[in-house]
Length: 440
Image (cartoon, rainbow, N blue to C red; front, side, top):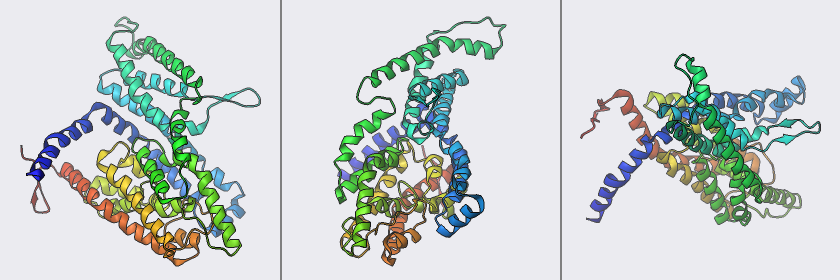
């Protein structure tokens, strides 16, 4: 009886609620707006892999042929793609949301873009010229972009519906008419955002982009080199990513000094011939937990590429598998997507937490060698990186075990998603001998 009640609650309450959320105009606008960034992210990933390919001989050869700055020059396209994710998101989200309201989407997107730029503090160089920090336009500013794209657009649309606009004669071309219609609502939007910015600047947070890190800094600063601390930090990485916030950047911004110090202590202990004291280091997360990137999505990327029956997911898998090998997972995070996707939230959080537990236990029991102080690029592929970081084959074995676990955790959720996508592609037909017709 209890199971029937539980099942009834899920079917009668949770499933309809999830369906309403998934079909809401705001989540659809968020999904479609974020998807616009996928092509640029994939392009940037290609150049990043070439520039940071983790083989020292290759890096030395390229430097000898093209000069010491070759990697910096090669990553110009990466900067031009990865560092505009916030811009793409705010424009795409605002455009799609305004379009759903049947309001001129271009005008709404331009106003939202101006509001987003207004939230970012400008810098001044020695000559007195103003410039905009590029990092605030990428994933670091993504959460602000999402908030602006959604709420500012709603505010703008509300004013349009209230006819707070300048009316032009019917003989005026639509482009000109729409521009004047956006004039008064745009003025109010920028004025409101300006007031909010001034209010935030009067607080210890100093700027709107600092709000998130300000509230997270104190709790994260209390974490130490422990299993509970590692679990909390990793949970926050994945949880923040689900809302479009670059969790790894937020968490590492506070924890990186602690983890780097721990790695350096291991290096000093190794040089002194002593036992390595620390488990939780930068290498612990970069190489053993984040295999495939935040959320440990390497297993998911391989499932998409090689086990998908859905054409859409298989095509996506072919695009994301390569970057995932080098721990670059923006293509899968925004392309699947994982951001704001409640269906993938559980494995995205659970998988890296499982890696934290298995790796910590393995190293604490001395079954797996600890990171010995070698600081490897985070793009170093698994198995190779495990051996180099620990100087022992047990490091590679630990990574293989984690990858198998990651496959297992993602498999159920992947299969469910794959069946749903395949059903959408084929319609209400029999798939693999099963009647998938939806019953009323």
